[in-house]
Image (tube, rainbow, N blue to C red; front, side, top):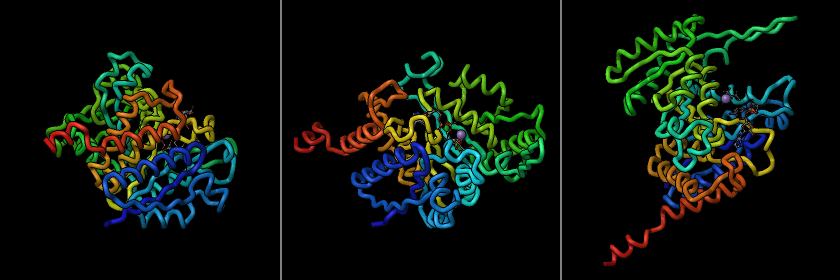
Length: 362
Ligand code: NAD
Ligand code: IPM
Ligand code: MN
């Protein structure tokens, strides 16, 4: 039987808590669907700085390169603020080294959690969109300088960098509801004017997809005012970071939001949208659903195990329908109890139903 090699990077804060749940649900999927997964744990972020002085040790990077897929919990925390090296450099370095230019952040609403959304029900019902965030360019990777009394961060985009993420977004839209909303700040930024030009050019290859351009400031308003009008939101690195946190609360909590980071080949990186949540870390109090749904994306996009990914997403939906709720959703489940509820549902989903058995024997 083929064995899939998955590297786990627990990282900092709540990272290890949600990674433990992600590993357990993937193992259960393996048991239930007859798949073999091998896990290797490596250090990244603050934990790696403490252990080796480097937020992305060479050993971690080598292991990721040799894997079929990488799962990351979260990095960062106040402990490392002001240090010479930052935990976040580990994550940014990993994204760059693996060439993960496409960060895919789906936003969906669970009907049973609609009342947890800060928006009224009529704005939220039926919301289903995905953010395509460019992940290896822009402000995050430009040259930064710091002098006496000044600092600068350069924002650079090449046409090629814009084109490849645009193609990914249009391709996704074609297979969904056929609409791309490209978000930029073309009224101010030169990089945004190039962005708009290239996106418009790529659009010509996707005649069945509708394209609209939206400035990022009014987009942040519209995302709250009319979230149901979006299908695929395409944007650059920093805007995508900010808009995806905003989008994540539509469903009730950032703890629910997953992401997949993919490149042109090689292993993908799968991580929840949330950070290390230092305020609730170490208490078994965080919501592991974003991590579990990231594990589902790992199965689907990382390992091409579609039935297994569907089963895991169905198990999450059933656990929520049956009342499993962490504190951020107004409930009493600990992080590990939420994971256990999802695992129970995975077993239930695979068990033969009583009526099927009767039909078989009847
Ligand atoms: P955060 O996402 O860690 O937390 C924001 C708020 O959301 C907090 O109140 C937190 O308790 C809550 N929250 C986050 N995840 C949750 C979960 N799973 N369940 C319930 N509540 C949850 O953002 P922040 O506080 O701005 O950043 C903290 C640290 O995390 C920083 O060092 C930042 O750089 C890092 N960070 C890392 C990643 C990553 O590793 N991918 C992403 C974002 C932030
Ligand atoms: C995210 C995070 C990261 C980012 C940080 C931790 C570097 O906020 O994955 O959304 O800004 O990309
Ligand atoms: Mn972010």
